[in-house]
Image (cartoon, rainbow, N blue to C red; front, side):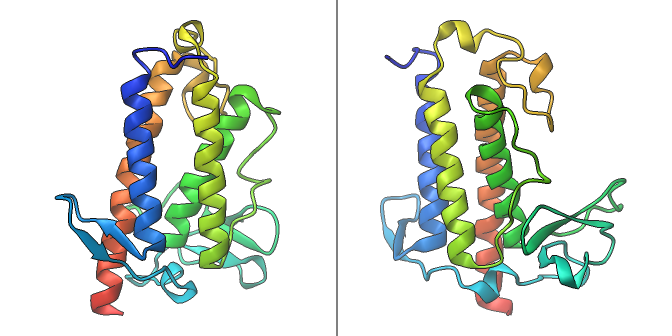
Length: 204
C-alpha cells in the first residue's frame, strides 16, 4: 500500500529520529549533524542505570523497591520503572533506562492499541535493566510503530480513536495528530538521552 502523501514526511522524520537515537546508543559512529561521522561508544549497563542527581527515577529490580519519591515500580518481570501518582514536584530527573523504557512502552503500546491485540499496558511491560535488553526492546518497539504507520491509509489518518492507547488522548484525537505527537516524543526524549550520554562521559 502506498504511503499517503501527508504521512510521508512524518514517516521520514520518524525514521531519521529513530535511526539517530539508536546509533547514539550503539555506535560505533553516528552523523554529528553536519555529515561528519563521530565515534560513539556503545551504551553500558552502568551508564544505562547512572543517576545524574540524587533522587533520580530509574528502572530497578522489584526486589529493591521504588526509588526516592516513587510509590511503585511499574512493569512485570524482574525490573520495574519508578512511577506513581501524583508525581513529585519538581519532576524527578530520570535515567537513560527510565527514558528508554518510557519510549519503548509508548511505541509498543500505541502500535498494539492501533492494529494489534489492544492488550498491552505499562503493567504488563517488562522493563530491562541491561543495555542490550533495553536497546533490543526499543528497536523492536520502534519497528512495531513503523509497521503500524505503513498500514495507515488516508481514512485511518482522519479517524478519531484509530488508536485506543489508554495513556494518552488517543481516543479523542485523529490519528494523524497521534503520529505527529509520537514523532515529537522520539525527538524530545532522544535528545534527552543524548545529553545524558554526554554528561556521563564527563561526570561519572
